[in-house]
Image (cartoon, rainbow over all chains, first blue to last red; front, side, top):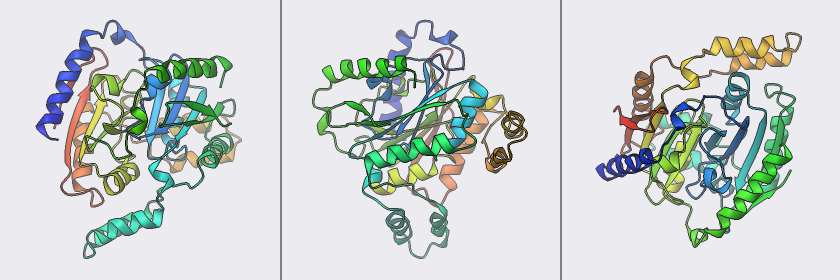
Length: 171
Length: 171
């Protein structure tokens, strides 16, 4: 952590606390009984573009917005904290559209060819995709078919456009 | 997805687009070369409480803010998109402080004892923790020692207090 990042965090937090109001009394289960799964991409401000506020929804973010990668968290959310809807968002210009697992594994291993510990990367499936809308449909399907996801869950799939800020429902 | 959730999303998105400005020209690599790992908890508005804006940082969120669960995404972020700092946040009143993997597995299997497919939950480690500050230290250690995380990465660990909106650096 550069000291500038730490200073930035502390100053921003002091500002945030000024308008914190009564948020400290919010309970742990999300009010909307909703999970949003989306990408870690820096251009996505999911709370703002979906009009969510503190207390509304669980937000799971990872490289690509992968539902498979989110399964552990989804089970906790549904079984322990009562959520019943899942909205999966993938987005245009996603990094996971332009890489493959083989490329990432090679990049990691080539960075230090003498280091055998880097071979651990061969055990990771990076869950890339080449078709944006297809990847959304596939993730929705994964959630609808997975026995560990509650049968009564409403699952929808969306695309977020980083060029315009627009959203579009796919399924 | 209840139609009310869908309507809420579309109305919020229309509002967001009004102030979208020139965000459409932001590039994929995060400007601050920063990753924030935090919990999916609905009370955490990470962009607001850390003063981040679109384009600044990758944000990875899962149940508990687990660094281990985030490893795939961290490798993509560092190797493909140039990030060099990681800030791990866990928080007070976290759901992962009050459950165990055994309890979650039992809850899932007991929900439909005749359904053998639910036994798949036995393969999932839910990555709970019983000591908040200790869990932050452990996750920072995990990242510093993991060979797949770049050696030169600056890693810090923090607690976010849902009662007050405050942050506190642990390591």
